[in-house]
Each structure stands twice: as C-alpha cells, then as structure tokens.
Length: 124
Length: 359
Image (cartoon, rainbow over all chains, first blue to last red; front, side):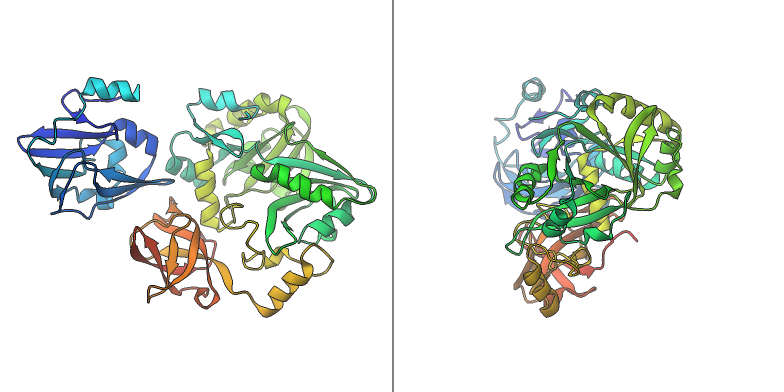
C-alpha cells in the first residue's frame, strides 16, 4: 500500500500536504481502493470557511456515496476542477492529480494529524 | 455465513468478499467498470450459487405452480423456462423466480437467495395432492456465463449446439466431461449467454474448464457489483429494491408475466388493478443534470412536491450517465416526463426513460 512519508493523514483516510499555511487535501490510496471505481466528486464549498470534521464534499463510487470531511479548519481556496470530468484520477493518482481541495489553514488545526507510520498502523 | 463451493477460488483471485443474503460472495475482482464492460464486450463468469433451487414433482406439480405463480405455467413445454413471480396474497410479491419445466410432472424453481426460506414456506403452504418438493439450494452451484462471446466459449465444452438454443430454453447436457449439467439460455445482464447449473462437487472442474476455454476471449470473473449495474442498464427488477412484499406486479410493469388465463393467488385484485389502472408505476429514468440516483432518494415534480421514490440507481458504466428506477405517481410515468431526483437536498433534473436503458 502506498502511504507517502511526507504527508499527514486522518483516520477518515484523507491525506494532507502542508506548505506554509496552505493544506492540499485528498483521499488515500487505501480509501480509493476500498471505494472502487470513483464516478463523481462533488465539491461546492469553494470560498467557504469550515471547521475540522465538517463535510466539504461528497465522493461517489459506483456502489457507494461517502462524505468528505475537513481534516483541518480553514477556508477552501481552490478545488480540483479536473475531477468534474475525470473523477477516475482519484483512483489512478490519489496523491497527485487526484487531489481535491486546497485550504488556507486557521492557526494550529493541523496539530492532531497522523504521521504516515501512524496511519499505516490503522490500515494495517 | 455460508460459502459457495468456489469461495476459496474467489479469495485466491483477489476478490473483495462481502456478506450477501447469508453467503460470502465476491462483489468485485478487477473493478466494477472493468468487469461490466468485459461482459458487454466479451464474456464474464458470475458465481451465483447463492441462488436457491427447488424441485417440484408429482401429478399435482402443475396445479401448485399455477396457483402460486402469476405467469401461465401451462404454456411451458419440456426444456422451456419462464420468468414469473409469487403474488403474496396481499397485493405484493413474495419473490420473482424462474420456472424450468423438466418434464410434465417435474419442475425446477430458481429463487432469490435472500428469499429461500420465505419462498419455501409460502409455496409449501399451498401444497395439496400429489406433490413432492425438495430444496436442493445447498447442493447446487450456478455459474452465469454472460456476454457476446459466451456461446463461442461454452461451445468448446459441449456437443449441444448452443447457438441453436433459443432464449429461455435449457438442456441437460454432457459439459466439460460431466453428465447431467443444466445449460440454460438465460441471464440477468442483457448481454446474452448461459447459466450453468450443477452439483457442488463439480464446481472446481467446471470453473477451471470455462476459464481455460475462454482464455483467448478475455474471459474474467465478475462480481455482484457489476451484476447489479448490468441488470440495471436493462431495467431488470431486483427483488428487495424494485419489487417486494408491498409492490404489485402490475405497478412494477410485470403485467406481461401476470396472466389471467388461470386462477392464482391475488388474481381478483391484480385483474382489477390491470383493468382500472394503478396509482403508481415503476419507471426507468435517466439523469439530465449531473448526479447519481440511489435507492430511497425522493423523486419530486417541478414544483418540489414528492411524487415517488428511487428503488435502484447507479452511474451506468456503458452510458456514462446516471440511471435509475423508481415508483412515481401515474401522471409522471410517461416516457420523457421531466422529474427531479432529490440528491443531498438538491433537485437534480432527470427524464423518464423507457427501459432497457441500453438499446
């Protein structure tokens, strides 16, 4: 299983790349594998400020619908518009082209995130 | 949880296994879209051994089946299969099933796994006269071999001329070196092909033979997830979603398997429904705006009033569009009527569509 060392994670199977006060967020390789073929990513929260654990969007696989949860608190400054027409890149490149949103973080909301090693233990 | 005779094979193939109707079943192997498209373009094999097989034998067998099923069993001849349902005495449906006429006084019924006990109890209740019923569900395996290349692949394993077998017929055949295998020209995908019934002891030999025969044709194992998307593209009903104990066959568009040429459970009620019309109808619909319909989502009209409910929905792997089925008030049942699916509190436009979705 692919769990890049340089990212942070949540137990809801999201990854977070932190660069300054901007966090780029997506779902993990494990999550895309569990969901199966992803057919729709709906994110309509661009420009909104949301708290950790609030829902920022929805991801639909052929058979299931799952909410996407904020791993940090902050303002959603960008979403990956390529996912509208090519949601399958979340399957093929979850840590790259399959990213979902960029968040301008508020203060220290990233403190509780998991390391790659800690996340690796969760998904065993 | 029960296993099928092939559960270990599925695990070794890397299938994702889920509990379904009391069985550990493969829901997915390579991925639902890939599997779906494999069946549409080539050939795929489904282990659907969880399905139930009852045998009904005796001089009273026909009378019993005429009483409990909606279709006219007297129209069957030896080697012919019929799609039918069991009305529940209350206007609803106990189950939908296939009836195989093996001989004048011997029939095989193939029922949904989740309803084996319920069907057995219901049919048993109506037995009178000379009828012996046996539930051989645990002894039989069933592989559905479906797709445009299914006939060519299976032909390598039997002398029976498969291309001459009409839809909804079956034969007991020598197949893959084994006698007494039931080859049935039926399926739940609309892609053509056969369903193969045999005793569990032959499962590994038959599975291996089919995959060897299909190696050059790109044969793949297919899970329950693709089985669902394939049947939905054809508008085939799934018991528990689109039909159940609260839906009548007339409402569900199953008037074509409800024959008033004979007496049967619920006949007066269903005959009245057919004559007077029903308040709600099961329809297919296609999403016009972006969105994927799901079981239990509300269906609205343009004014936002609730007019029905989604019973099945998915992103169609062939059409790359959201498709679904649901019950709507009769005023909204005509093809091309504009309706709205309530998806996460948003009204998303859809259009009533005559099934099959995939023409």
